[in-house]
Length: 501
Image (cartoon, rainbow, N blue to C red; front, side, top):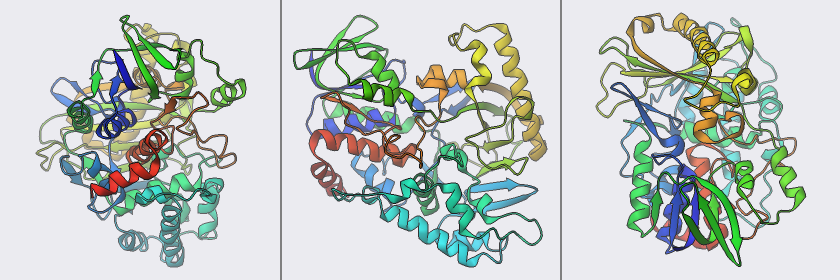
């Protein structure tokens, strides 16, 4: 069977790319190795409880805001079951004994933090203005065509340096805490590393969330289901249990071989899987050695240890915000503590159901973790691990839960079921090296080297997903638009998107 475009992977990037290309008239086939579509959009069940895998909340989905504008084209904006988070603190930063709110709306954001930092009014105003400057420097953020020589100088500024300089080190008179620490308090969202994270990455993510913050009631699987439905309605195919084993070429056509022996032929291929994993699939296709070496040498972001809790009915309150806790003064999650010192921090969430009431039915706890903590079992596969792996997993879960219970003591008696995932789980589930949460590290010290472009050095092969542009719902959406722009022409793609508004 001949297809114009084959897309490998059905994560958000793959599905958005497939939807756009199929809507614009191309013949699309999406190949997914798992039985379910969606990648990190998937939900999973444990007993009677449903949990999200990866996309727990997102920003700028209010009418007229960037993600809403993009998702109108993808027929998502008006069909999703959205729940707006607490406007006066969608994120709460628990740091050295005090909780600080990060609020929605730029004026409100400043007003909610000012009582904690009364001498920082000028710095707070400068901060929100700077976030807008970062957003304005990225035309695609506003569904606008970038100029040919669009130089993003914010890519070369460290977010940590910017924050340190923002308030000249002024500390709260009573607590001694700097505003800079609190503004970095949700850096788990981008695996913040003080030595690498660019101001552009920090700024776009925070601008989006302060604009408006949302959760998907009932889970993010609904995003995948709508996109799959749309691709099929546009005449495309989305196929499960089609693990790609090899990408080769015969003449001008790509040949994509899957595990069950089926062969797919296409003019072009788009990969939604990690760039390194993509290169490993190539057979008989010449790739410049310098390009291969650059891609393979790029470090990946940190991994994560997660606990999923099913809760007794009407025992633990539903929290319409995310809770970030730090037990020391170290605020950056991209370099997590190790061994007995772990965890230094955690993210705690109570995801909403479609008919959410006063009480939570589930809770999710996440803490960044280095893959090296699991290197003893790195050659094992999910479902076939040694007993020592499960012993270590239980030990780490106990350490994390003990810290969480210090902040939420009533949680302990509410727990019915516990499910745990490790960096190895994440590696096997997502196919990312070292179980990386957010793919390749963006490095302000070398932005050109660590920027993955959608157009590869192999004619007809393209990347999409979290390694292109930025991770997160908005970043992956813009990345998918960039990928489709390489195939259809970016002016045409943006025109089509704007016509849907």
